[in-house]
Image 1 (cartoon, rainbow, N blue to C red):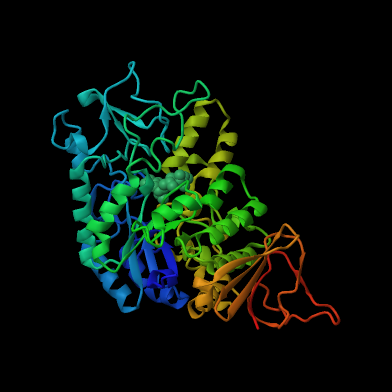
Image 2: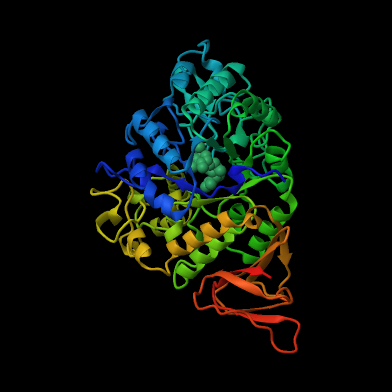
Length: 556
Ligand code: ISL
């Protein structure tokens, strides 16, 4: 397997709006990130993924860009951005930006021109179609709105926006669009950024003719990925983009390709594929979204991806991000075993093959936040859900129950720096309410407590950085007959590591022969975990694991 710096990186995802507010306007900013660089260095991470900082009306918190060449003033200036890059580089931290090029904002100049008239030179930068039977051109549903088509009276046509009307889809079939995007990408690369996370990038090619989605009911709008995910020209477009941009720089790209299988990941991020350097895995989180927590399935999905992609393709790993629930709320325990399960998932994330991405706040084990009233919410997808359920006639409390579960605001709340007003994030009321009850979970207290989640992350990051087997080693699943247990080895040359995790809140027992020559415990969720000893006369070791206990060992 080729060794690369970005395979060895430990990345940290910053959601700028909620990271740190340096100028008292209730919104995080670039200077805030600069002020926390020492904190990030001490955590041990060496790569930052910055969620969108570009000029944007923020209908989808920056995932609706109105000018790719400028910084949203709420975050600061281009000079601040340059300073962040320089300061991060001085500390050996690489910086990757979010690249949202499946769509722009409806306030982008191209779209503003495009909607002026049917023969405007920018018309074909987007998808415009006339009505069909006095209705939308097809039955596609959008992610955040009922229909993916949005009517514009000015020219009596609809435009396509598969996320929302604020996010019109760019027409990648038009070579002019691609050229403009490549120039913009090169402009950023010339600035010295170290790569990109490419948003919803496997949506850029649509099935020609934009046919209706298959429908099994008489619903007016049908949600399906079939006609706009992994479309017929997607690989051609990505390869062309790569050749004209990334290939000329020592940078890395991570594709956000939803709904893919390991087979497809090999196409997008194969060792010899010439597309992205890595793609995020989402099968485990997608499964959660559909079916809720299922530990057996989580183990099965992770093992399959680890085994099938070894030596063939590289992935970005995350258990949570700005779209997902917090790790402890999704796969762990946000109550009694919050700290234990937060540590367990730190070990899980940092002992797998693939580049780990830590979402801000997970390093202190922040749980989800739930608000009582819809007024507290800011997420565009929460409003879609609220309006739909309202239309269906549900009562307010039943609606809010669902909004609490599904709104992406659950994980987007301001970072807890201290147990003071507004969690030390800002001196004024933040753009999204801080959960007062959770402020006891904060960086300052975590720093003081040597047994905290934060210190656990530090130790785990350090272990990963020092042991190439944890990055490149082969993943070998260890069979256990207990459902809550997950055990695997990572093996590279002479080095062999053993990870065992109890993903449940019940005691579990591991019986294994794998420690025949003995082992050293490197890190454990419960700090009093002793050395393992063989039962005399027996060839195996019996190891009892407490709720959410996880242990990393090096085999001798
Ligand atoms: O997580 C999802 C929904 O809860 C996904 O379907 C997600 O919307 C999809 O993977 C694309 O997400 C990305 O693009 C969106 C933006 O809203 C998300 O924040 C971003 O991660 C549109 O740009």
